[in-house]
Image (tube, rainbow, N blue to C red; front, side):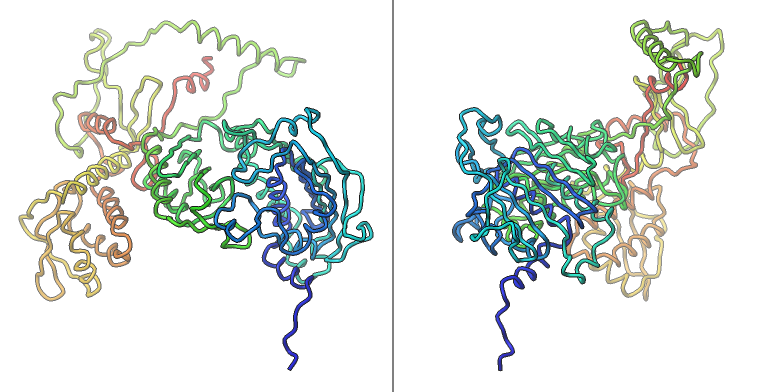
Length: 638
């Protein structure tokens, strides 16, 4: 028939490029990964017109001689694996040997490389090991042989700058420089799908950031010196001695170091290190979640779920945490050969990875005070000589000197100080009415009656602290207190319940009755007793005492709605958590509800013994802190 033909090699490479080379950022990623695998300590990336016109990557890595340089652009040629068994423990970023051939088939490519023959230790077992001093500091006994070689390829065809064997001698520094011009210029169907220069540049910057974060300095290794230029303008200049936190601060100046929480663990063959953003800097998407496995940026649904679960109860449902997560584990315990871009991996024991990540992150977050700091407007120093030459500088120096003086010489306290009311007479539940506070008369003895809190707008409580004061959302705080009590009681058994004097009846649909029957064990655990009371009717016989402030009928109806829309067979524990969230919300005191002084004291006392009092179960903050120093700045007292 003759309908089936064998495609020529360049056509095969162009098809492969469709998988590997999605956009200019894909080219930059592949070239930078090659530079890192070659043992480079310095990488420079230069881009013009968002990568459409030019992408250049220069490194000081191992380099290649003429023979290897020509062979590197052949399909499926690589120095990173030798035999099939090497696929079981891939330690390099690249290994397939198809990236350079794919790039050269859809663009104009010029590569110049000069090898180092001694003093360079190729990193295979662990790319985190540092290269030898003889390479990092040239001239320390390192012997260099062979000159530079050059090869030019235009959409799969070798250009005039190439020799008979593919590469020709030229001048060049040690390492490798690869220039890629006019990507997809012979493939208009592909080129028209490229976005604007700014959009493509943003994707290139993202790839640069991922590799920059993965190669920051640590105690075990020195980082990479990395530079990114766009249209001859320097975008990033990252030094090799920068640690992770310092590098994050330079790349993401909107993420202050004080808002990142450091945690680490090492168990069961997994070493985890993470910098976790406080809930106050959460985002509307997951863009600021970076996960690295043995210095490789990855996306994995199990790890993403573990991060989300670690923040459960500290973030609102539509918010995403900031997280920089680094995992180290044996190369044999996962497979990276599952996706052309190598961004996805397959763990041989994904449940272990999930549980270790969740445990490490959750434990640290629960042990950290996540109270929200008040964001006050910046205070400006007064200057008596506005507009005078040097006036701003002089006023700044004077203000600094005054601040230092008041720091060393505290003002004498002239205000009367009062002790808080005794708590020993209060044991009642929250929910009563507030009484008017009595003003201290001039002749009254100091230290007898003054309280250090007050309720405003029947919704918020202002309480004095050693550092300043806090403003508390009474509903959110009480909701968290009840939620933790409910969680503790349900872990110990079922909730205590009380029989209703008059059972409350309600109608139920067929699907609602089925949901109650399917989740009968959960309903019993909540301390709720339901009995049939006629056709399509049920009655509430008993209700949990902890939810005494909630309406039984309203709660049961909302519970049925929740059970009817959830697939409980998959995640019963999560369903129970959502039910307890709803229960705590309904049983908590409400905004607009007046509280007595004793009830406020009890609420504040319970706050001190609650594990995660800074956030309500839905992730909203319960407390905002104000420091006295911030107030002094606002009132120009420093």
